[in-house]
Length: 163
Image (cartoon, rainbow, N blue to C red; front, side, top):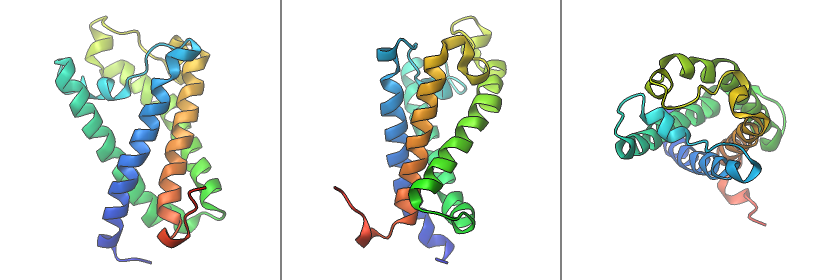
């Protein structure tokens, strides 16, 4: 296993790329009839209600969170999971989706100043208040998030296929 300090650069890269993929896919949600799913803005409003600053802070929080997930994935989860990077990434994304749909969104409902002040509808468990397409877009986005992390963490640089 690599030294711990060797994991951070790859974790940061995986954090930036996986956050970009996650955000890009959620941006497409309104095309399918879902409301706008701007998770970075939601996260940022936990710190400030200045919406421009909240969006920037939200992206920073998302990248930091994704970097930590990528680091922990490399250090603890990947060595213990069997299978290809694709299957590990799907498992990671699926587990994150279950966590965020059952714990994350209902917790957001309780602590969000946007929700508590009536400025935003509470997403609810499995984003049920936003409709089924929202939950589906969260699933697709988190599966892609997990795949990006596992691909960057588990595939040696010289063996990556860009086809």
